[in-house]
Length: 212
Image 1 (spheres, rainbow, N blue to C red):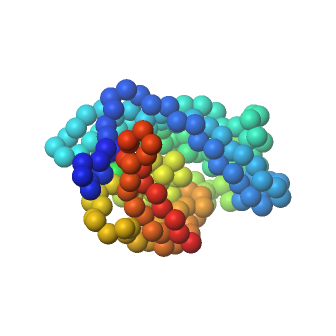
Image 2 (cartoon, rainbow, N blue to C red):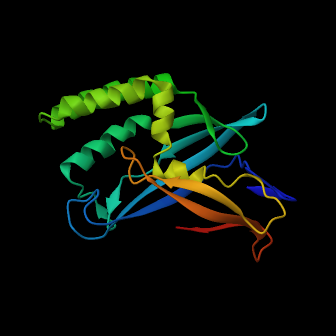
């Protein structure tokens, strides 16, 4: 983002950016081992255009998912989830100047991809919980508002469009209630942070926050 006085707003760059995402998973939340594991993949973000005061942006998963820098050793349930989530990308969004998701403009494409992905998954997975899993995802992918809420629990999207934009008043800091997702299908943790805006050593705007 770029700051104008006490205002921090999105800085839109038309050049596609590539981001490395690293997640550290503890106590087998995703990995079927009782130890800390590193989950790593890459995402791309490309800002497409300005629509009134809002922006169109495309987000895509640009790599396979690796665990501890090796080919995926995810357990069956998580491997199913990872493959199912591939239907979501590429994802084209409309966001406001504060990074809030307003619309999913390629929702029809995502629905079509989910039908194709689901057919492939049926060839590779079986079990009494599979139909229940598919019905849950049918609801998520078929209803745009549900999918928007679902996206808010995606760790990359949650962090990339973090609640840092807007007005910073002259007070030393502001207090906000933050939520951070544990996983895309679970409710996250809620906590209070102190957040303020300052300039970094290279004169760029820097947002700092601390909380518990």
